[in-house]
Picture 1: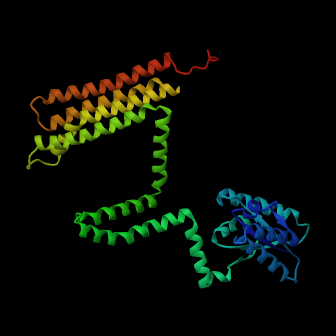
Picture 2: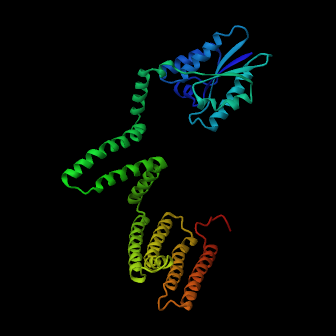
Picture 3: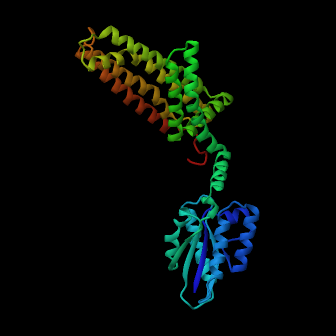
Length: 362
């Protein structure tokens, strides 16, 4: 017996019509195809169903049956599993003692990814891929481009970079006429490059998430939004201080280590202040939200401990008058002691005074 399996991996038939799948039998498949064509005439799975009926009607030398099996809307591993389950259902419904072989009808390579799943259940005699003839014509190409550009996401991805590219030359001419600096061309190119980079790396979702987090923080009273801004400002000031320290504490004959040490020496106290402020904001929000843990208080002490160590090491490499070997030893010991002491202290506090203790636990 030959089984004609029409595969709809993304379950357009189930989502767009009232038919339950799998659909078994020529008349049932024809009714399902008509229903899908009525719901969405542009769906390629309509052609798959009618192709299955066409193959069914052209075979008269053996018993034949046609069925439609579907996956899920995500068209992923779960879809393959659902197709396998529906193939099992179809095979169980065939009341025949003959060996069953299958011909699989699909509309593209994506649906054909399920072939190993089908082959594990029934031998496959062949695969028919449905290709609509109009897709090769110029009219269809025009229609395809029109449909693609009508999609908001695709339109933004294609037209925005193209529009920026077309604007670069006239903006450069306008900048030259009105006397703007020649860097205008570079700025526009940089903006285009950043846009393409963000789209390529998928960072637009990250940026949207960050903006949504800022919006939520503004209206939900999160202290960390303010402390993060202050911390960023302190880090910027630290960077300026580090550059100033390079000018003051190094000369042209310095090697690679001294400029790095000078930058760290000039920036570390500001960066540490920013880290402490950010940590305090996060701790405050966790406390207000009811998720506070004693170990969270380690963060500002760790920041201070690291800053002490970096300050001592950088001063030692710069050979500052006060930064002798004994000073380096004191800073290393102090930083280590501060980190270990805070860890132990808050671990003990968490054991003795746990937050959100379950009242039923004794």
